[in-house]
Image (cartoon, rainbow, N blue to C red):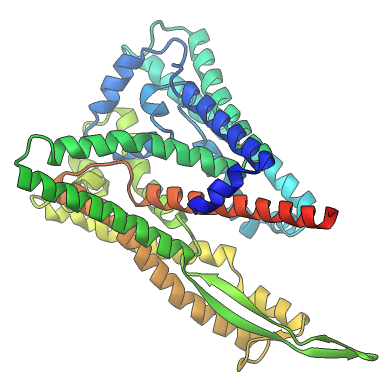
Length: 439
């Protein structure tokens, strides 16, 4: 990996792309420090840090790199774009026209990209208006109360989200690629130093030497083990051999070659965790924004949804929410894979092209075989996701080790880093091919 990066830095074209990406990320971090006009950020930060059920808001703050806690102009960040992308993916299954655009090559993808942008702006506008009205109703969040200030805040937050979407697309076109993913990754990475510092202060600093050393070793071991598990889960795949029949036309023989269908163990990526977490956090966010005091049956329901109550030795009953969370992870792993991978369609395409899996008849038997293999590996991937997602929750509940780089963050960071390195290596390979052809 490091050798590939060093070789890439020797190439001027790729070096300029890396520099452009770095400068864009610096602009993002600078924008994260610019407060929303008319906002009393100190009061908002105190309110935010004092939330008892802040897991939901903490998840959003984690994805915005602290911009939400600071209530900067980039507070919404790219979360509207992520939501918009998920909506478009679901619509490609529900609406035939969207599915047709998805399969229509470059032109169809341009249409879907444009629709994604419009939905992103719409979602950002709705969220920013709702937040501005909420600030207006509070006592001390705003320096002054006026309709003009509400409009100004809504425009600033919407423009910040649109700007980040534009930056992500520029990184994709002029940088190293994966623009939106890189923006999300730098946001997550920006919170990790403070998390490491808080772990050090909580378990190492001021403790007896033996206890501090053991605590430091355990913390490092857990983090390294989770990273290794994410790397293995991200790269694991089952390769299905495919043989193509020979065709004789005149004196020439076509076909007869052999290929493979790679089925990733973690086909759904991080989406099952995001879906399950979003379902759990939405009621908590609504409760916090409405100022509900958390009493009655609804208060107990929110307590079961709150991750900070899970694996608590004093209240094991709240861990029922954790069991439901695990079931949702497994369900969404199967659900998301089912909308992104169609065994019937793949079997039909193989049959049209004269391909078959050795020992399996073309057509329906092939689709049934692929479905069986897929169900098996999805379960393995879901179990891996469960371990990655639940381990930080366990340490938080039992030991009080609350950090932002949970399973979701690690999967995103590791996956994006590996994918970006592959992009750089492929760009170097293309450049070498061009140089060979020019010579």
